[in-house]
Length: 421
Image 1 (cartoon, helix red, strand yellow):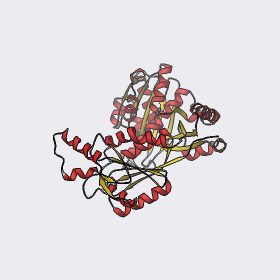
Image 2: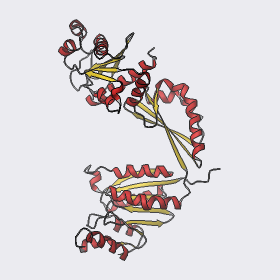
Image 3: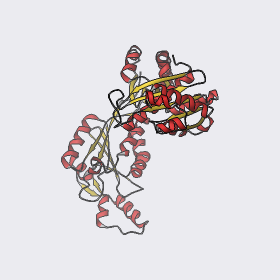
Image 4: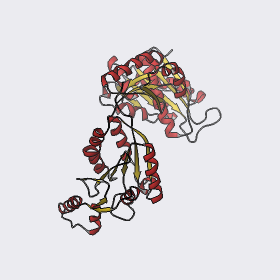
């Protein structure tokens, strides 16, 4: 029987600047990752402005939801910094000078050749119900509360100060206070199948997962990640349990799986090419070099990437790439015959095993009834066969370019595997 507790946390990011979009809240993301590593489940991340009513409401709601409430921001000495006085109000206690905190603030300024002002000295006045947590990188101390069976921690919003407090004080205290589970994640990466179709494909497998293993679908551009999360107290057993479930589902989804964990599609394709000692080249029209950029972003890609050409204008599709003028005139640049010739000619031009081509209407203009915005043709040519695919994408230009990149790399993957049928 598992002996661990399910511990829930809520993260409160405080400050108008976060709501205005003037500052990006990277703190909450980092805190979530660190809590996950020690087995604490984040149930809510809340951003609240510098408003007394909003902050007090957020305190009450967080206390109802979570065992641990971690706050960042609002700890400056000025009138718009409300976190400290509102914590004192919430816990019905006074704010008093903490001599140790005052010494730390004074030392902080002295080391920098600056005088401690009365305003900055206010940083050493803390709610009487909190435990003072020294902030060695700044002037705003951390404040740890243990009230009503819940743990509260208030930290500065400055990222490096917050991280130091979390690492040195908060995470160790949480691990001492709670009997935490082990949380083990394993990610299976798929491409070429939509989330709903994938869910339907594996519904029986998903329905038979053991209670301590949860499945999440994480869709992104043209891809879906399957994240298996196992909870328990024995890491090696959790790894074995998850591995068994992956083994069971792989025969069902194998043709869509390109990798695991953090592997990207461009990494996976590069690995396949390197293992087979094969080369690739690209002729990109609508994708404008984006696919070549993805491939060459991988270290060592010179082992398999021969080169590419971006014949954006039809004149250069003909003059530089050798696409027949009659093909362009009769079928247009966005057509199957055109991408076939582009793929075959770029393969020959760069002496590659695979030639890939893209041509389409990225938008937002340029489409018409027969070929609306988002119409894209792609092709992959080997020495014996050329495979094509027509895509019907979106009205958004950048999204169309990115989706084309995923589709071209997946087509290459399929061709390398020899599963084009």
